[in-house]
Amino acid sequence: MTALLDVRGLSKSFGGVEAVRDVSFALAAGELLALIGPNGAGKSTCFGMLGGQVRPDAGRVRLAGADITGLKPRRIWARGVGRTFQTAETFASMTVAENVETALHGRTAARSAETRRLLGLVGLAAAAGRPAGTLSYGDVKRLELALALSNTPRLLLMDEPTAGMAAAERTALMQLVAGLARERQVGVLFTEHDMDVVFAHADRILVLDRGLLIAEGPPEAIRADPQVRAVYLGEGLTFSEAG
Ligand SMILES: Nc1ncnc2c1ncn2[C@@H]1O[C@H](COP(=O)(O)OP(=O)(O)OP(=O)(O)O)[C@@H](O)[C@H]1O
Image (cartoon, rainbow, N blue to C red):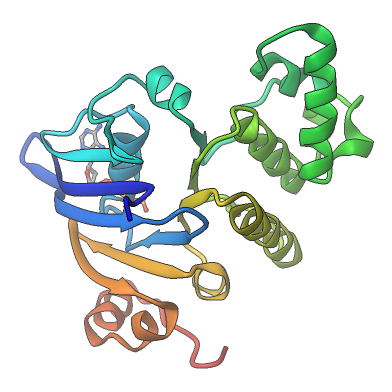
């Protein structure tokens, strides 16, 4: 079977810094794959190369078999890749509904029906008429997700989707994303600093350290991996033994 996302030998250097070194992995439709690693490991650079913001020095990115390496972000988006960013990209003065309508194409009537559907999907139907600037942080993240979904993506790239959220909000957002992945067979790649979120929600985990992929596997295997533990202990972080 063709993987939804197939990444082979991806590399990028900035001056003398090898930010990403020969990284290869695949992602299936309906799968939640986490990309983790200490600060500076190369996660954002990897994301940028998948989304078209960063041009790879070497390697190939294929989406459902089609080569999308080095395409502009707009072209990649048009192929069905939705993306959320670490810092929310919404217009504070527009209403929640206007933000979504701006992202949609087509006739006005179709756009407002689609806006209602998307806001219902992310649990923001009741906030449709509010200025986006008045939303809580968790709700801004939901709005971002609605914007990323406006393209009916096959692949969602989420850069720290739960950063700055309270624990209950984190769980709710990740459950929402997991539900979308399962029901619509959307593939999800996400970066995340919170290990509890990663271990609770990822089907599989990729671990980067100084640009290299040092481990890949299901949460239990990653949690037990001595190399991964060493990298994180070096950062002064520990994995909790429970759950
Ligand atoms: N535009 C750039 N110019 C120069 N160096 C860069 C650039 N982008 C990233 N780097 C360097 O590449 C390495 C990887 O950075 P990257 O941001 O991809 O890591 P990260 O895993 O996303 O880190 P964090 O968890 O802190 O966001 C770092 O050493 C960083 O300083």
